[in-house]
Image (cartoon, rainbow, N blue to C red; front, side, top):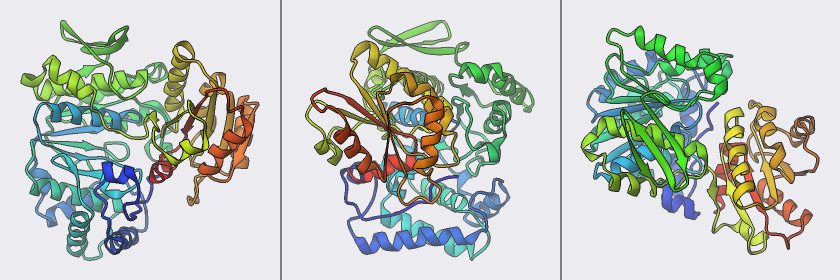
Length: 466
């Protein structure tokens, strides 16, 4: 399930930097009320399918048919980071870029970027009101209405490209209305939303592959060993071959690759390669995501594929809550100088695996005690997320995602953590209390590292307090 959007007055440095939130509490209250009301237009929060979307797009003039070149991105893990990296590449080469992502962390205006800037609260309120009036009370889900409003905003604002991220799956996702994208990207496939997308990686890959379009190139990102073993690449090939004009597949490890080297990273493509700095987003997996973005950029803007542009862009990727260092945050005041806090929204098995890779890298390059704080939604597989992290964790503090009825109770998380083998386990009622618990339980004279992870809901609460 996707988090319900909540609007609030701009009261954090995060909102000032990454959202279009207003300082007017009356305007924000109106936006909050409107967003909550949209959920009453349909009896299901999530109802995959495109019939309602196409009907409504027809009513508002089919904005999806009048857009700049579109890159459509799907995947279980990494699609947001890949989108953010591709945006950085396009903007570093002088292009104006619309972006649609979900969910948001703190404020709903994060979801829509118009030609480089987040949509403002007033503009979002206006276009949603317009769409609600045209819809006239007919059944439509929140995500369907919001996506159509974004497409309408994109049509009305000049730009050079649109980056369109799927919400869930791909084949039946509301965003899958672009008949001729400039390029599609499918990032890593893993387990998530199984009740909607299927209970095997092959079934999930089939849903993601539904964004492929005849004749349009598709970049296939890094796939984990388990996904390859379960046949996701075969699914991609079969889907491609079933289209009227087979789309060229650009597959990690075949047509392109990206990997770390001692000085940064190397991106290989066709019979060539280029040495680049590592992306500013932390983690080996971000080198894979950057590679997918680089390959897509090479395909859609080949004349701008130049070392200076690429290097500049990789140092300017904005994507919060992905192994993000919290430099200036109230939580830092609870800890002595020299302690580090990292924030990550990862919440499934693959996210646990890549987080473990980074922890292993820390052990090799900058070892210090690591204290993990986790809050998760009960529909996630907490054991699969936690198990890869066990060898690296000095202490585990479990908390609830405050205000979310579907949050794991700490008692249930504790049972799972015990079964996974964690020994030093603390519990806390909320995230602030969890950080204080670590501070009260550990030797503060030893410079240590805190990682907060397990949920984008939790990450949003941390950033809202920034």
